[in-house]
Length: 319
Image (tube, rainbow, N blue to C red; front, side, top):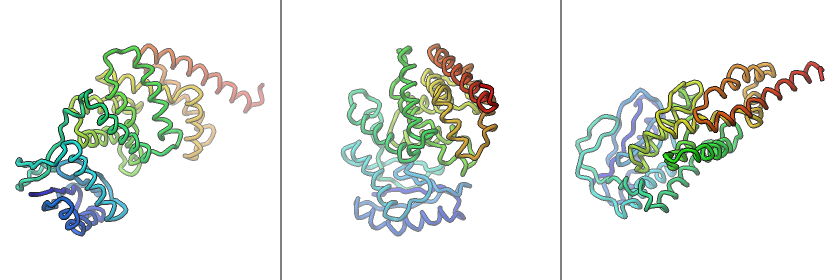
């Protein structure tokens, strides 16, 4: 019986080498815990940031604080399988890691994805969504501009817009809102658009939890659609709603608050902050997909115009 752990990344990377070394150090502990032989594999890739897969599921990327945290992450993945299946099944078929087929037989079973997509298993689904929400809070924090307060505001707007569409899948919408900015924490480091990063991270996470491909595809579509700069056209109603809700949060009084908080954080001048209204924010009202969002955007836009007019008059003492 085998329990497979795969590490993807450049072997020359300090982080990748450290993860591999730690895995060999904790190998005996994991084997004793689950009475299974641990097989550790490395898949060479260009990235210096390691990605670790346990039993074929994405577990994490980066470097935990220590070996103890690494043990807990691995145990959480395996035990989640046990919870989903009541016991971990022996897997007799070969699996793939990073596109490379391994020759060993594996003990790692898959959880029953159907149970996660059935309305009958409501309590299990609610717990998973709660766990994802907690992860988002831990990742983004409570910074008002792009942190969890932003997620909460977008969630309220999104479900207000969804009232007009019976075909909306509320699970897809909620997951997409929760995860649409999760990639911002890596954007500057990886020099990759946050919407693309968020979509990639969401896909791995939802696969890990066993959601259906249909739900995953819709969540990914919605996350890609929310970005102003990416200019991705949504294919789903959930994508159109998230796009509208996210842009509405950049308008009105909240939008004004966000501009000046973000400008202060980035060290922008007052002139640069004001220019941001004209370069981006005033264009958002014309990018709405839903009728309700168009009406809300028009009201918020007018308030911003009034505010800027008042601000510029006060600056010039033209009251």
